[in-house]
Image 1 (cartoon, rainbow, N blue to C red):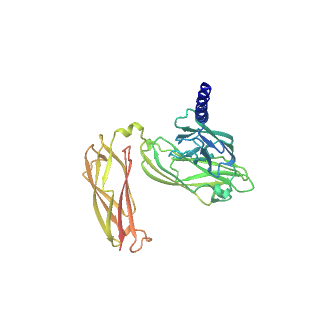
Image 2 (image 1 turned 30 degrees about the vertical axis):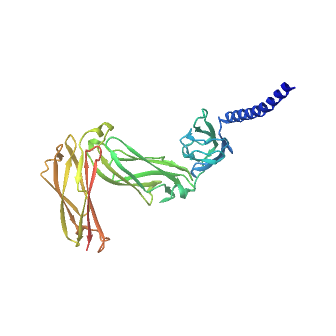
Image 3 (image 1 turned 180 degrees about the horizontal axis):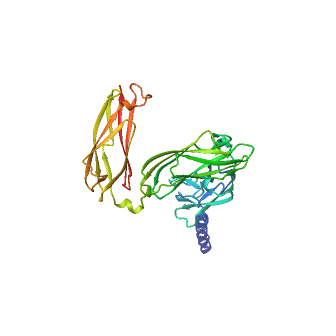
Length: 379
């Protein structure tokens, strides 16, 4: 009898312990089962639907909850397409806490048609990434002609712009600017372009005939030939012609022609430095002249060539001891700039600011264009 009682007593003690151990193992096993997806997302797929590429980006938030009993850290969120950007929590997500991954999809670089892009969510200590999906269809709508081509060039022709600014154009390296056009007439037109003045640097690639209501794109091409030895700013006008007659408004073409430089030129060569780049003369009477001295230094390892000096309205320049157009490596040359307020535009009234800019075009591959500003207030 005593033996049976003892065994029964031991069994009663072991049974609760065994039950607790089993429950603990089950709980640990449950956690291990969920380890591959510690974050539970409301949805792992965002169906964008039909997206108009001309209306810009669309946004969405993938909401989630930490369903584990320990903090979760998102190591990285990587989009499989450059059209998608993401933002996610950097701090640990506590057990039971909720959060979101913000996604922005920009269709501008996506081809028209259906698409499906993946986003990979990497979580610390989890070997497999969670995959989110962005899917939909990119469509392209046709904007109103006034929006796509806001400028009325006359005679039924509308343009996407009236200024083509090339900024820098290098010798023997043609540059191109694209411009939209639209024929708003109910009949076909013969399209042409007259360049004024005819420098030979500018050409226009466009269809000779444009159907009624049709739109398209012209190419304005600027080519500067080193054999011409031309440097500096140019301003030309391109007059569209409709059926042989000039339309009302021209396209203004601006460029600044410089040397052709290669990447290898950036590591050496001449280096132009001007001190100071700005001088304020204070208050001056209209018709008064004032001058100031400047220094041009070549901090490079080879001679610096000054291709051209362009004088802004009301400015003049005088170099001191400059032989030819070159400044030797490590040497400096002084020059004097004069501001003549008699040349100030009538629009600059008493108390107004008069500015003249002197522009240097050199063979410095890093900064081929340097400007000196001369400033005064008219009395």
